Image (cartoon, rainbow, N blue to C red; front, side):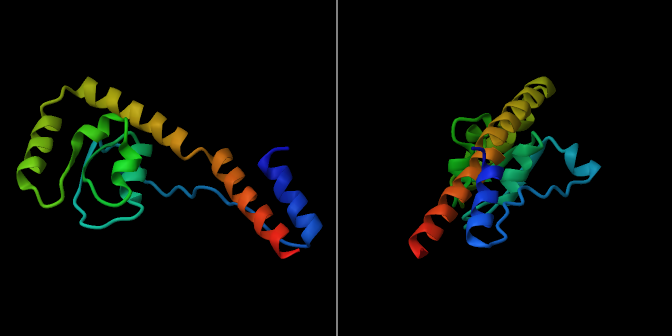
Length: 141
């Protein structure tokens, strides 16, 4: 049974309205044309800017804080992370990225987008929420 069918079963058996809405995309044309982004943060549990940039195929230069390392792990973006507060590392990452040929940046961006789509696969996320909700409902019964 897929996630949508499982949501219907929960709703029917427990007289509830439960839905996983999914991603809401709000991007304009100018944002979608960006190929690089500099992200300076000291604390960020879930860095939406990084998630949005990799979904667009944009290479982030980001400090290794919060969820950034986990999101970019194993991707070309991992090479462009730096220690928070280390200006030398930041400068190295900026120089490294601007020295890359356009084709390499576009290719890395495509790999980032594929990674993000796997990482944030809606069916898997919805399934996890449905599992959690089923578990909570069964405990309360």
